Structure formats: C-alpha cells, structure tokens
Amino acid sequence: MIGLLDFLDSSNDIAVALRLVLALVFGSLVGWERIYTKHSAGIKTFALVSLGSAVATALNIYLAQIPGMNADVSRIPAGVVSGIGFLGAGTILVTGRKQIKGLTTAASLWVTACMGMALGGGYLMIGTVCFILIMIANVALMHVSTAVEEHSKYMSIYVEVDKEGGVGRLSRCINGMGYSISSISKSKEKTLQPSDVAIIIDVDLDKNRPHREVITFLSEQEFVNYVEEI
Image 1 (spheres, one colour):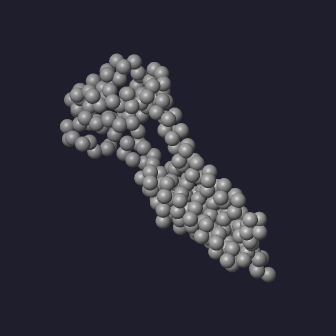
Image 2 (cartoon, one colour):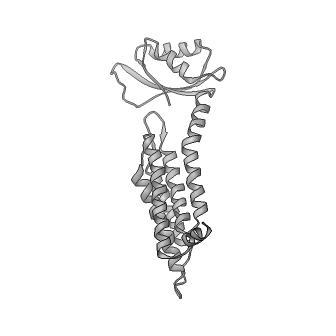
Image 3 (cartoon, rainbow, N blue to C red):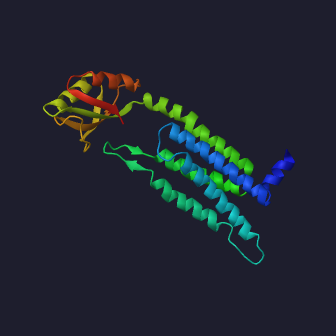
C-alpha cells in the first residue's frame, strides 16, 4: 500500500495520469452534490475545474524539473486561484428579493480547484482529505445551517399583499403576533397578481420559534397572496 502511494506521488507519467483521473472523479462528485441540490454549476463544471487545476499544477512541477528552465513553481497555482475567483464570481447573483445566491457554489468551485492542485501536485493525502471535508461541508453542515436558520430570532420575509391597505394590515398583523418590524421596503419583483404590491420585511421575533409557523400564519391571511422567507 505504501509502495502504491509512493508511486502515485511520483513524477511518473502514469502516476500523474492517475492523479488527473482522481481529480476528475472527486470534482465530479462535488458537482453531483451541487446539481442534486439544484444549484448552479454542476458535474461538468466542477469536474473540469478540478481537472484543469490538477493539470496546471502537474505542468508547473514538470517545468520546474527541466534543467535550465528556472520556472517559478508558484506562478501557475497562483494564476489558477485567481482565475477560479473570476469563474466563481459569475455564479453569484442578487435577486430582486435581495437574496444573494451562488456563494456556496462559488466557494465550492474555489476549494475544488485547490483540491485539484493538491492532487495534481502529488499531495494525495491532503487532496483526499480536502474532498472529504468539502462533502461534509456541503452535505452535513447544510442541515446544521438550515436548522440554525429555522430557529433564528430574525426573519426576512418577502410578501405580496393587496395594494389597497395590504401593507398596513400586514404590519398590524405582525405586531399583533408580538413581533416587531425592524425594516420594511418595497421590492422591484414582479408580483403574481397586478393588484398586489411586493414588500420585504425584516422581523424580530420575541423568541426562538420555528419560522414555518410564522410563514404559515401569514399565508392564511386573506390580504396576503404570496409569502416566503428569504
């Protein structure tokens, strides 16, 4: 087993090829998790990012070993990290409901590139551990994050209410529940019904309580035509 690991860590062409295959497989699995949870950038994107990073790093090491080349072993990896930053920025967007989407995907792309560089450079143990930690962060910690957000004392709610008196009735309804409104603003989002107005409300709850209860209660009000937490 140790002999195999030593071989895979070497600069042998077959060993490098196997590391590239491993980088492709690990990147594909990270992308599978993203597409399974319906996020932007899927299997192909993550696979190519991981593979490209691994190839760039392997090439960098190869060039550094050529006599008289005097290659800077940090230049290509530094370029990869910067380049992936631009790629990840393209996945981030701010919706009309003031939601920021794509941050986790962008971060996943960046760390997947780092994983690919570790694998391409022959640092198999660190590359493998990085892959495992990426999956833990994106799968296991996602449930932890959801649970924490669900019971937070603060909520941001997107609501579509009747233009005629709907905002006032909504404010009184929320205050009547014992909650306080910290901010309220009109959204540019197009409403489902032309007779409605879209607003975004930040609410401070009196204590930790399931957010689903608040959303359910508001959705039952006759003047509310659409509501969701953002």
